[in-house]
Each structure stands twice: as structure tokens, then as C-alpha cells.
Length: 212
Ligand code: BEZ
Image (cartoon, rainbow, N blue to C red):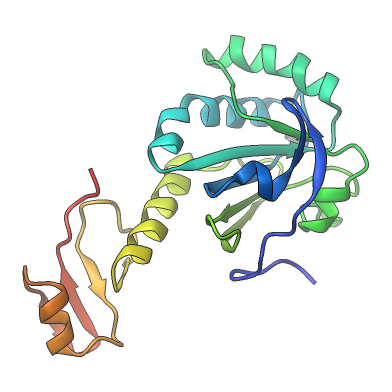
């Protein structure tokens, strides 16, 4: 059965470009952006790795550690990272798992046989500091991911962990948020003294500013 939101992210021990890791120990209380890609030395993957490296300060600001994975070897990853750095004008500093025997890819359901029997598709697992899976995505091999959406989803998860709110469609940091319907108006007035607009009893909007 595939992993679902709310499941504990399975632990594993494996070689990476930065040595052998035990996943939960490596995460060490941070959020984790764990993502698979089909193969080293392929064009879309090169741009995705480059984008993740370029966004290192954005992940760091949010307390998120990126961890890549493909079914290639450490030697292949290391040779490819030079290409990523050179072509994407960056310095890649996060580890990439070398899952030659597909142990972790199978554990996380990263191989979708209808797409490819041996290579991983483009999966994303956003995992919180308690090692709970909070969001999953799967993209096919020919479609590179939108990294603005990945950062937006992290911001939304972290905001909705801090306050009794939910994020509406196309929400971005700074936009108004929805007060959770489980809160009474009285409780909402206490938690959101800045006030709120009631469009329907179940649809109340408030302004919480940005985390910055
Ligand atoms: C790519 O990264 O460009 C790619 C990888 C596997 C299949 C198709 C595209």
C-alpha cells in the first residue's frame, strides 16, 4: 500500500553523496523535502537539482533539509553534480541517496511501473520534524516540478500548524486565510483580535500577515 498523509515516514539506512545515513537521525528534528528523480545525466532532472540547490537559503529559512534520490550510484551522482553546478550556475550542497537496489524507492512507492519499471518518477514527500508525512506529490518523467509550489506548500503547512487556519485556493504568503470552521465566533475573536470577515458562517477570512 502506498504511503499516505499522516503516516510516519519509513526509516532506512543508505549510502548518499555525503556518506551513509540513517534517515530519521539525519533529519534530526528538521522538516525534510525528500524527492526522487528518474536518472542522473538527464535534462529535466539537471534543472530540478539545480533549482533545489539555488533555493538552499529558502529551504534553510524554513528549517527544511532537502534530500534527493535516484536509482543511480554515488559515483554517478558525484560526476553529475559537477554538471548540475556548471550548467545551473549553482553549488549543490544537499545529499542525494544512491538507491541502486531500489530499496528506498520501493519503500516509498517512488517507482510507478506504468511509467517506468526501474527508474523513480518525480515524487515529493514533505515530512515534518516528528517524521510524519504531511504532503505527497508525484509528477511524470517529462514534467519538471514547480519549486514555487513546493515552497508555498511548506509555508502553508507551517502556518496552519501555528494557527487554527486553513489556506484557500491559490493562497500565497500575505494573503488572507480561512478561520477553521471548528472555531466558534467567540473563540475566533479571541484568537484573531485583528478581526475577520464572515462571508458564510463556515467561510471566515482573516489577515495574519507574513512570517517574515
Ligand atoms: C529528464 O530528466 O529529462 C528525463 C528523465 C527521464 C525521462 C524523461 C526525461
